[in-house]
Length: 168
Image 1 (spheres, rainbow, N blue to C red):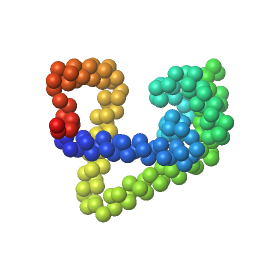
Image 2 (spheres, rainbow, N blue to C red):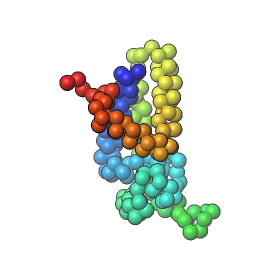
Image 3 (spheres, rainbow, N blue to C red):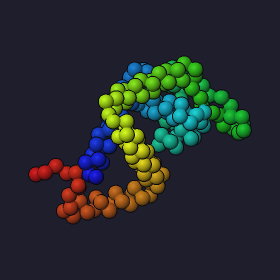
């Protein structure tokens, strides 16, 4: 099980590097590509929803949206149900670029598993879905992360070794 966790973490690191490379290809920063991804996945969104999802302050999101709007990647429109708010949505150009980037990502994943037994790919997909659900559940319970982190750091400081610590 520990080896699987290490490999999942390696995939996450590779995916983060891939995301940064996608940002460079699009001519934006890592935070901007995260915002664009949120908008493509679940948009249009309010600036406050983007702020919550990205873990940014309201002024930071305003600056981010100003940059994305200047680059022609998003537009802000009056919210149809709340006149005091706006909705941020992708421009058609940004939607096309993100669609192409995600298609490239899918092609890269497909190429990596192409020679695998289809039954194993299906099993892996199911396992990855369960991992994603578990990680999402933990991410949505931030108090548990803080609590468990404090407990584990205290244990490690008291002489316990992290399970993935290198051998001495």
